[in-house]
Structures are given as structure tokens and as C-alpha cells.
Image 1 (cartoon, rainbow, N blue to C red):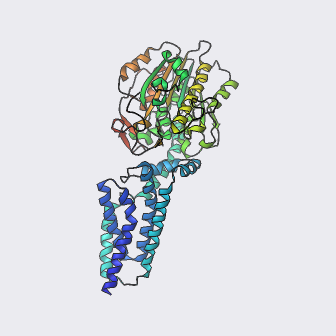
Image 2: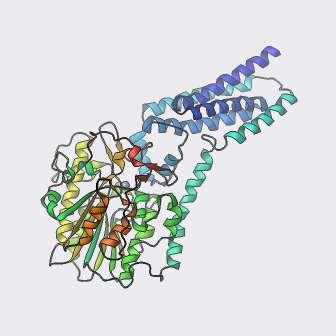
Image 3: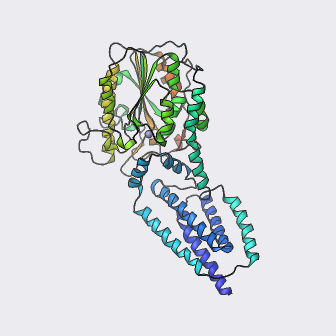
Length: 507
Ligand SMILES: [Zn+2]
């Protein structure tokens, strides 16, 4: 009997170890590893309480291992914080999930699935043991289990379910914003009574544009011939995006949300659109991004504050987006109006998959090979789109202010590409910030004087635009290096990040 009990105990230890091994293997933080050993002890204690509870615990642990190991395999560095990754997966439209599976599931993921399956089957052999655990031992085990759970409930993988609930809760923000802004619709904030210095203001949000790939900023290939040709008239600054996620950066640009108060500011802050509504401009939102889906809801909730919204990709997801040529078709059929207007253009730009973002007849590398060449083509194509947009507005001596920036940067190399990495890379934040004014504007020089060598943080983009267009007189320059990595509760220092996939040159 003693021998039987001993082999049962050994069985518990071995199967619990098999289950925890993948997470132990990928953990690079000593703290997380120590915690996992505590979890191992807890599992064994569960086995002393009952066989069913042991099997359920192992099963739940295996589920979390799938996510955690996957995160490690593709983004590296698991330190016990998978929550941002869950958030990104949850808010991605279903199409992206599918494309995600195609792009990021590989043989290693399948191997881990097989491993977990086999080790779980072994665990089921627990039911072949027929032993009776004395009540005293059970009682002590329960007390010990409660003590350990109290210690580890705030750490992954135990808290993953809790994290998922938080992620779902955050989506409620969009609904809250619409309600709140309707309530304060009649309260003028910035623009009321301001002189309209410009006839038209055009704000162009690019997508996934790493400024290091623009020849305007020094890239060795001629990716931006149009912008190079008018470079004398452009003010192009080194800027960093405040986040590496579209769904956060565009709202931050539009409502000036503070990074560490994103949720609250997103709901309560009036938008840049409202500034121009109050000033008496006609406001138009034109977008080639998705109009629906969890990923786009936060942006659309703000976009619909403009007088008219046009989604070229209405009711569809990213995969269906045509190239940004759709803007040119729109302008061809909509002659420039005499009504003073502010245009917000949201391009699909260089959104992955890069080769879907250009046509072969307008390509720097017509037979592009590899990720970098495809990405260069997307930048080159956008340059042509910008040329047509600029030329549409640069007529009839109109007083025009045109601003081009990107929601975030992009990692572009043959080993890795995309954005939303954890830990993040510098490349994900380095964006173009290009300003054109058809009339002399002294305030442009003021911005340049203020920002000097340190990149301008676009967290205060709303202020910069209001200042440049004479909607407000205070300049609120940010040279902070604080940026969000994936989710607002994860504010990090940009200067401490690594750059990947290109030389250390800063453009
Ligand atoms: Zn984006």
C-alpha cells in the first residue's frame, strides 16, 4: 500500500512537471520561473485532494500553455504578461484572425500541441490508481492549496481568464464615448469664434509607415519622388507615434488622450473634428480602412462626429480594401468645393499584406522579391497617391494646410515584419510628420524651434494642428519618450527600445 501511494505521488510530480515544462522553458524571468515552481507544487497538492481536480487543473494549464508558448515562439520574451497579446487578438476582426493563423501558425506550434496532447493522455492514467488518501492529508492539502492560490492568483497563467474579461470590458468604451459626446455636443471647446486662416485643411493618416523607408528622410532608394521634388516646400520632422497600434493612435491623435489615462480621455475629450465643427468648417472623413468590427469601432465613433463620412470599404474588413487609388476616384467625381472644409483621410497605406497595397504598373520594384521590396513599393505607391491629393488641393490660390503622418511605424525585415511586438522595437514608432502650408505660417518655425534634435512625440498631435491652424494660441510640444506598447497600461520608454532589421542610422 505504501509503495502504491509512493508511486502515485511520483506520478503526480512527473505529470505536473510535464505540463509545466513548456512554460518553464519559455520563461526568461527568474521571478516567473519561481512562480511556476510554486504552481507545480499546487498541482501536486491538487492531486492529493482528488484525481478529477488534478486533471482539470492540468487541462486548464495546457490551454494557457498554447497561448504562452505561441507568444514566445513568434515575439519572444515571455515574462508573465500575455494580456496585451490577448487584447490585440480579441479586437482583431475575424478576417485578421484568419490571416493571423495563416501567417503565424507553424510547425513549432503544431509540435507543442502534440506534446501537450500526449502529456495530457499520460495524465489520464491517473484513473488507474485506486488509492485512498487519508482525510487528514486531504484537509492539510486543501489548506495549503488555498494559501498558495492566494499567493499566485495575480499572476499568469492563473489570471488569464480575468485578463480576457478585462479585454472584453474595454470594448464598452466606444459606446460610452458616443453617449458622452452627444451630451456635450453643444458645449463649444476650442474652435468657436476663431478666425479661419486656411480655406482647406487636409489631415492624411498614413498606415504602418516607417519614415526610415522614405527617401525624403534619407532612404537610399527613390521611394518618394514626389515629396523629394517639393521638399523645399515641405516641413518634414522626426516624430514618434505614441503607440504601436492603429486603434489607439488615431484616437490619441484626434482627442489628445493622455497615454496613461487613455480610457477616460477617450470617452470624455472632445475631438479635433469638433474643434473645426465649432469654428464653422465643413468636416469630412474619408477612409479606406474598415468601417465595422471591433478594431475599427473606436475610430469610427470619433469619425462620425464629422459632417460626412465615407468608408470606401464600407461594411468590410481590411482584406477587402482596394488600393488607395479609391481616394483619387473620389476626388475625380467631387470637384473642389468653395466651402471651407477640413478633410480627414485615413489611408490603407502600407498595411500588411504589403503586396496588396500597390499595382504593378506603379511600382519601384516591378518584380518585387521579398518583404522589403514589397514594402518599398507600398511607400512608393502612397507617394503617388499623395501627389494627386496635394495637386487636388493646391489650385486656385487656395490657402491650404496639408499634414501627412502615420498611425505608427513598422518593422520591415526578412526575419520579422509588422507591428505590435512585445517587447516593442523603435521601428514601430518612427513615423513621418510632414507639413505643407500654401501660405507663410510663422508657427511652423516655432514648432521646429521647440523640438530641436529630440523627436516630436505625436501624443499632442491635436494641439499641434490646432496651433498651426490658429484654432488655439498655446503650443504644447511634447518631447517625451513615453509611448504605449500594445495596451494603455503598458507605457514604456521609446529610447530604451532596440531597432531591428536596418542599420542604426536615425533618419
Ligand atoms: Zn496601423
